[in-house]
Length: 121
Image 1 (cartoon, rainbow, N blue to C red):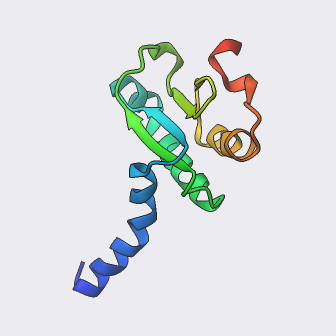
Image 2 (spheres, rainbow, N blue to C red):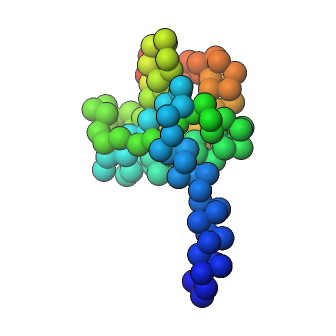
């Protein structure tokens, strides 16, 4: 970084990503980021959810956040989706590609991607 203008540009670029991870949307996407989750690939999954939610224009409605151990390490990376008035959905063995599909079909389209849920493993 060589100037304040460069720092301001970085801040502007990252603003949406920070806001989406600290928001209060009606849908919460929670990615397990304990040691086991990170080792299994949770970091790219978290990034994919943030990017996909932003690209879909859902930042006002969806908050993407992280948590520690969810308790089902053999299924990592684990993602839980909480929606007001609905039961929690737990997605397991997630990847960035699966995250894109969950955003498109579940969060945007309203249809749970059953094949990625814990009930199908």
